[in-house]
Length: 83
Image 1: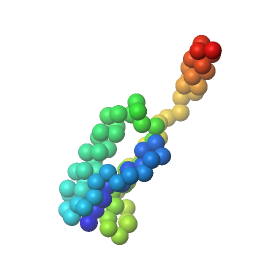
Image 2: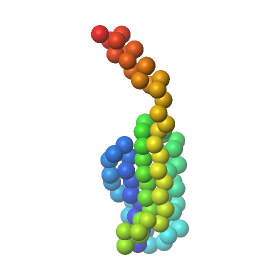
Image 3: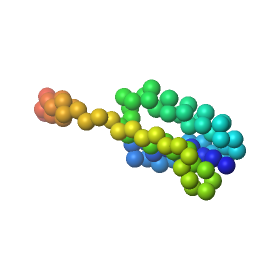
């Protein structure tokens, strides 16, 4: 049996579980990754893990948004303009 586990912006949950067929579990895994990569404006980091029923990792994908120092400058200027 297989499950797709997700950790998004530090929040852990099971995306789907109960897959008996590895190929169908992989479809769920890659479909969910596709949705996450299409929504990177709202995602700072994620790990998606395809696990077997023994807790072993079959596949894993991780993402962390690249650091952009201009984000700090923009946030500071927005905060100053709101004061």
